[in-house]
Amino acid sequence: MKEIKSDKGPIIQVKDLVKKFGNFVAVDHLTFEVNKGEIFGFLGANGAGKTTAIRMLCGLLEPTSGALRVAGFDGYHQREEIKRNIGYMSQKFSLYEDLTVYENFRLYAGIYGIPRKERIRKTDELLRKLNLEESRDKLVGGLPLGWKQKLAFSLALFHNPAVVFLDEPSGGVDPLTRRTFWDLIYEVAHQGVTIFVTTHYMDEAEYCNRVAIMSEGKIVALDTPAALKSFYKTDSMDGVFLKIARNKE
Amino acid sequence: MNQLLGFVKKEFTHIFRDSRTMVILFGIPIIQLMLFGYVITTEIKDARIAILDHSNDNVTREIKNKILSSGYFRLDANLMNENEIDPIFKKGNVKEVIIFERNFAQRLEREGTVNVQVIADASDPNTAQMLYNYTNGIVQDYTKKKYAGFTIPLQIKSEVRMLYNENMVGAFMYVPGTMALILMLISAMMTSITIAREKEMGTMEILLVSPLKATHIVLGKVAPYLLLSIIDAIVVVCLGNMVFGVPIRGSIFVLAFLVILYITMALSLGILISTVANSQQVAMFISGFALMLPTILLSGFIFPIENMPYPLQLLSNFMPPRWFIDALKQVMLKGNGLAYIWPNVLILSTMTTVFLVLSIKKFRLRLE
Image (cartoon, rainbow over all chains, first blue to last red; front, top):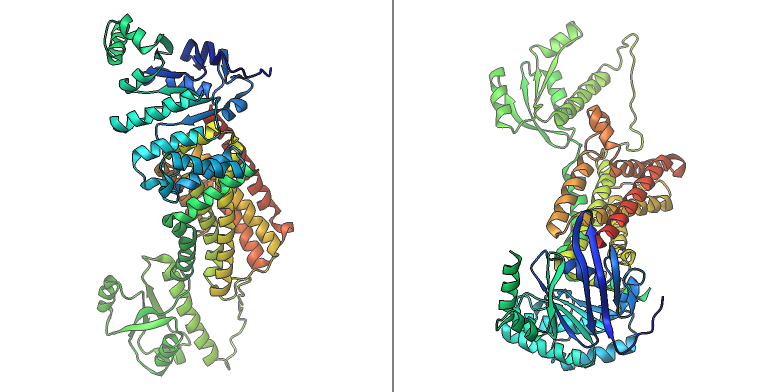
């Protein structure tokens, strides 16, 4: 079953992926691939099956049928390995607000079994990079939202995952902060980390290399933002989204 | 293992940084114990009474002196006639009125029998019953001593001895009960709240996508509370012993075993609650309503189970605190060992297993 992780080729492979809850089909024959270092946008209205799809990709949920490989590991039998090789950042940023910045790092490092020496080196490095050195011993709860966002992102990357899942990573953050956050995402993607991002903000969708739009458990469109815009003859992702919604009716 | 240690450490940090949690963990047990020990007492002290003495002779005076010097009663008013009785009860200060009939000493001498009427405010029936018993006891005692020389033929005397609690100290009853309540509060309520908090804050998602196993997450959340609950149990037992004189006649090891078993049961209940509660408030409500009330009402903590209607008696069988309190009293007051409390241990163990299996199953299901 073990497969050698290659540097080339898709890092996420999904073929005819189905998830049923009783009679309800939450995810209906998804097929797509995400390449290494790609920023892949995953869009869709609430209840479109996005969350269910991500939960399967993260190894939280076993698929009903279809093929799924994430970071070279099988979505049925190697869910624990998948978990070890992905990072995850939720829309609530999910930091422990009553712990200090440093303590949050220590906790995550501990959960992923990162050795002490490496942890200390990496924490210092990241704090310097994020300009958070002075806030090292401050409680996370008191930090501005933009800082928390960056911090949550760094934590998701702390154990050097191959893929990072960002579940609406910019909820409640102003456009300027969003922009600087995306600079960070680009930098990480450039280093070869695959970014899988869901979002409600259409400006964020424009930043992605490719975008998949889900509706009623199916992918209804998948291409680069530019190609989607020209196909639907509109000049923004907003327009694409609206036209797809209208076509459905 | 290191993963788990870091996680437990973090849990302790949460607890020690939150002043409210600290108050619940260490303030409430002490306050509760003191409240139950001192306030809800079944002993009578300085109860206010009124006396209506129609004869006011040397016999009634002697009886009155004896009653008022007993320490149980305090004279609130001397009444002049029957019309005053009703208003004085309505005012509510006086709990009991004692009436001596006319020509008390004379009648006693001539007819050999005379009546003392006791009227008690039975809006609080337990107190009324107790006041009457105390009054009656004093009057009986007086006659017995005064007429010790007279032999009354064929008298049957019952002598009562209160085993295990000779002085009928209320704390003997309330300390085990309070222990059951406090451990339930800390173990079940606090764990369910702390797990619900992770869900509310979204940090549970992060833990779930991490390589931590579900059992590790649960264990990491629960372990600190197990330790703190044990500390609380020690505090309650020590305070009960030093402040209220509640003895520990049985083996310390049996007591410790019993307490840890009960805590484990409560912790698994807490996990079970947290699998259905998605917010701290819901968790608090469920544990408050579903655990605290039955613990107080149906466990024999305050109200004797034998006096309950039959359906409630049946229901009380399903209340874990009932078996814990009973076993606790046996060990602490009677000095019984496992030979006597094994049925309780068996029942509590079964309950613990059921809750544990259910909660782990449900927790796993939640992940799906």
